[in-house]
Amino acid sequence: SVRRLRNVICFLEWVPSATHLKRFSVFNASDEQRARLREALTLCAGGREDCSAGFGRDEVRALCNALDLAKEGQAFTAQMSRRITLADLEKELITQGIYKMQQ
Image (tube, rainbow, N blue to C red; front, side, top):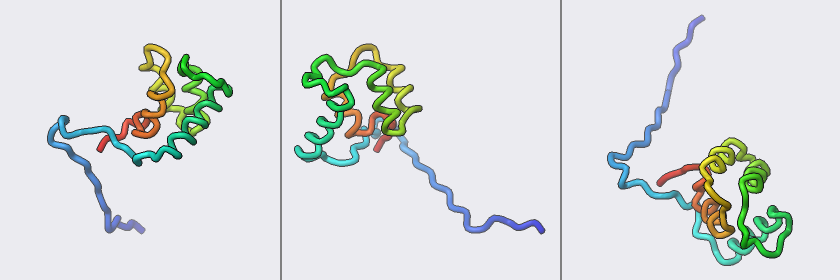
């Protein structure tokens, strides 16, 4: 027998102007959370004490793979023109810039 679909809910996000878009921030990270994130990123960098050289494409891609963000990591590393600093990578993760989410 043929049944019809009932109670369908549709959801649409609409922004009338692109000027109203801004980066989505999951949380305002506390100093402790930032320290833990920085420690995790340092460990992903091969345990280097000094991350001043930043992260290359392969390192960022490996990090994204570990976070189960392989597709997003490939897109993010494709737009990288140079190595990304630890502070910039931290900002991308906190604001979810890798996900391209907007608020």
